[in-house]
Length: 327
Image (spheres, rainbow, N blue to C red):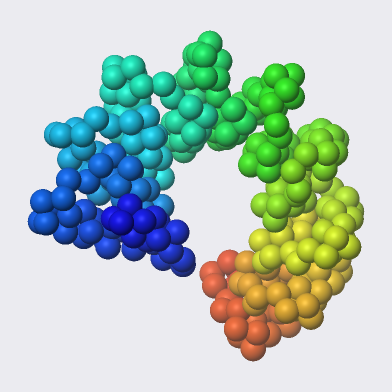
């Protein structure tokens, strides 16, 4: 019964009540009901998803005193440490897991490599991945995505793209997270022809997600990015604010202020959420196109659209006035 209650807490939306999970563990102990490893793992998952890695560590500490932790236990604790940006804690948990001879799985490698990625520790990530490939239970796409992210953040773009090639050579299933990581690398390295190849590979596998569309649009020239967004619309998809903003930024980068304005208008006409970031991108496009009047008009209308202007909004508008000699 406790495990089912904790499972319901774990899946609650929009806010994961980690405090209730910890409270429930305390109630079990007060009633002299000893929580098993499944219950503790579920409580730790609640903590992890709420970025409460210290509390997840306390649950693990309690486990050590009377219950044998499982591989899932350590993987969940590492995920919490990774989400909390504590690579050192994740390393310590990894070492303890190995000392207990608990076999890691793809999730274990994924969260550890993601922790490396957040610290740009790309060499460590590649070493861990290499070690994992020699294990009986080999890392999967999630681990490769983590290593790609670490390489990307370390500006090691050829290595990141090489890892994507390794995934295909090993016959691993492509997923949206892995493709998104590869497309993000293409955008940073300005390798848009390769981005088109990756998109073709993605279409043969999982459906493109909103995040994948964002990464792809950022990696492509504005014309092809716009065609990709039109493809999403043709499929019956509804681009979210991030997709629209990325598309407007692509137009700005391509010196296409009119296209940027059209994309913003499309977002507003089709019920898109009023986005400060999207308006800022459109103002920046007008600034690059020396369209001061349009930039000021957008700034004036932001408040009407419940998109509160910020420092970026005013800075871009001021720059547009300067370039347009509008004092």
